[in-house]
Each structure stands twice: as C-alpha cells, then as structure tokens.
Amino acid sequence: MIRSLSNLFTRIMQRWMPDAFIFAILLTFIVLLAGILGETQRPTDMVRFWGDGVWNLLVFSMQVTVTLVTGSVLAQTAPVKKLLRSLACLAKTPGQAIILMTTIALVCGWISWGFGLITSALMAREIARHVKGVHYPLLVASAYSGMVIWHAGLSGSIPLKIAVADGDIISNLMGDITIPLTETIFSWEVLLICFVMLVTLPVIFRLMMPPPDAVREVTPQQMGITEEVPIRIDTPADRIEHSRLPTLMLGLLGCAYLFEFFSDGGRIGLNTVNFVFLVTGLLLHRSARNYLSAVNEAVKGLSGIVLQFPLYAGIMGMMAQSGLAASVSEWFISISNEHTFNLFTFLSAGIVNFFIPSGGGQWAIQAPIVIPAAQSLGIPLNQAAMAVAMGDAWTNMIQPFWALPLLGIARLGIKDIMGYCTVALLWSGLVYGVALLLLF
Image (cartoon, rainbow, N blue to C red; front, side, top):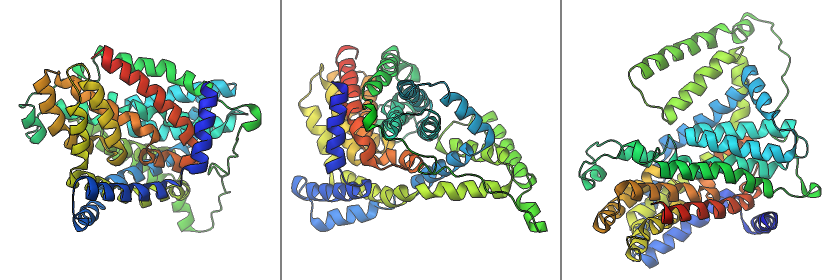
C-alpha cells in the first residue's frame, strides 16, 4: 500500500508540480490575492509589503549559500570522502541504503538542521556511488527527512528562544517566564515523538522502494562528482597556489578563533556550523588551488537559493504585514478548546509554514496569538510552543524552500522527490497528531 501511495503521489508531482522557482512565483500571487480579498488590503499596499520584504532574507540567504559551499567543499577532502565511503559501505542492498540514509538524516537533523541538511545530501551522493540498484530520487527524499524533526532538536529556534528572556515582545507576553529545555526538546513526550519517528520513518521510506524496472540510478558525473585533474607546476606562482601552507595557516587561525569562541560559552548556530565547515575544509584540502577548484564545483548548485529565497522573503512580508498569517492562527484557535488546542495550533503552524518557512519568523507572528490563547485555556506554554515548532517542521516535507540546498548538492529537481516526501508528510502528521492529542 505504501509503495502504491508513493507511486500515485510521484506521478501527480511529476505531471503537475512545476519547478520550485515557478512554485514560488505561484505562491507569491496566491498570497497577494488572498491579502486583497481576505484581508481587504489595497493592491498597492500588498505590492509594497512584497517589495519591502524581498530583501529581508539576504543575510540568511548568504548563510545558507556558505553552508552549501563549505559543506560541499569539505566533502571533497580525502578524509571526509573516506568517512562517507565507510558509512556508505554499511549498506549492502538498496533497502539497507534507504534505511541507513533516513536514519542518518533524522539523527543529524535533530543535532542541527544546517549540519543535517548538508551532511545528508553528501551522504546520499556517496551511497548512490557505492550501492547498486538504489533509486536515487527516493534516496535523496530520505536524506531530506531530517527536516521533519529539526524543530524538536538541538537547533530548534522556538525552544531555544523561549529558554531565555531577552526583553522582547514575546518575553513580555510570557511575563518574562522562561521555559527550560527540559520542558521542551528534552521532555519525555518530545523525545518519545522523535524516537517514534526514528524507528518508523526509515521503514516507511523502505516500503516506498519502486520495483527494479523503475529504479533510477545516476552516475558520478550526473551528481556533480568530477575526477581530479593532474597538477602541473611551472612557475613560482604555481608553487604557492599548490602549497599547503597558505590554507593551513588560515585554517589554524580559524581553529584559534573557535577555541576562544567556545571557551567564552559561545552557542552553536548556523554561523558556527559554517565556520567549522570552512576551517575544516581549509585544513584538510592539500592546497589553495585544490580548495578553490572544489568551491567552483560547489557553486553550481546555488541557483535555487539565489533566485527563490528573495521571493519567499517577499511572501513572508505580505503574510506578516497584511495580517494573513495572524488570521490563519486566529481561525484555528477560535475553533479549538482545551483538548484540541495543541492539535489545531500544530495544524495552523503547518499551514503558515508554507508561506513563512522560517521557524523564528513564524514564532514572531504566531506567538502573540498562541500565548494569550494558551494562557486563557490553561494550556502549558511549553506545550503550545512545541505545537507551533512541530507544525513548522512537519510541512517542511512539501515546502521547497528548505530542500533547495539539498537539491543543489544532489543535482535533482523538487518534483523528483516530492511524491515520496508527501507520504512522509502524511505519516509524520499522523504521529504528531496522535501525540498532541494523547501525550500533551
């Protein structure tokens, strides 16, 4: 049944789902019309909301760009290739490959969404090289599965946000009450949900494997993996470029900074992950020329981020400024009670995530609605916050925004994986929904 369902959704997505860039354009005009018709905003206001928001993700876009490039470059070093190859060799059959990939994606995604996304993409390429007969689109879809639990993990922006009181509007709404991580990502309920996902999702992906005659394999060249070009040194400049000393010195400087950073109690964030990738790549590549060659290869997968992140920033601007995001949350809360509040909050967050695919940005919009409603119904704030966090992570499975870096590395299109991700969405939604009704 699972295979039939995945085949159905794959056929639908292959036939009807446009490229991710077109999808972002369609979302833009859907939100624009919804703001005019649903929120009675003037067309000129919606256009202004869009234009004002287009460049709001420039910093984040650059961060994700650096994550993709430095992660890809790191994967081109000999030690990391050896490590990835050793892990890939744990799988001997296509079925084992899918289970291994999904498990790695979920574990790494729980540790850090940025680390998990890039690591899983690189792991998928390596597994595809070493396991014959594995269906590459399904393998890449399973590599994306870690994004379904990232917000219940160590990099979850909402639980990290409410763990400290920094005097902003959300802290004021909570009465400067902080909620420790032991009541959010380390609570037994949330850990149990993550454990169920870890046990069941690999099996779900395994059951989606197509028959042998429908398997789509790829060559290393199709994945963007190229053979090394022989080194030729003719001039003093060539000797410097192919020397290990410049990158080694810069890498050691980066190590010194990281030592100071963590000694002072620095937190692991996306910038830190990028810095670690950068420094490690510098230390492990044998020369500056070798490093730059890897960078040149990595940047070929950046088009999706460069083109589409500004569009999503504009969509977020319209959703926030027009009141659409608030209206979605308010409607779900208006039909909920003390028994269904967490479930409906989860569903509202899942819908809002389509248009505001940022955990922190989504919380800034939904928190002023969710927090007072939870307090009036006597719902613990840690449960309400995690319901938003889980909803935000849940619909990542069918939101192209976060898949773009992974697809850039894997050299696939969004329609190649979306059918399988839809099945993962249905299953994870069932797990989340049952847990929110029975455990919270």
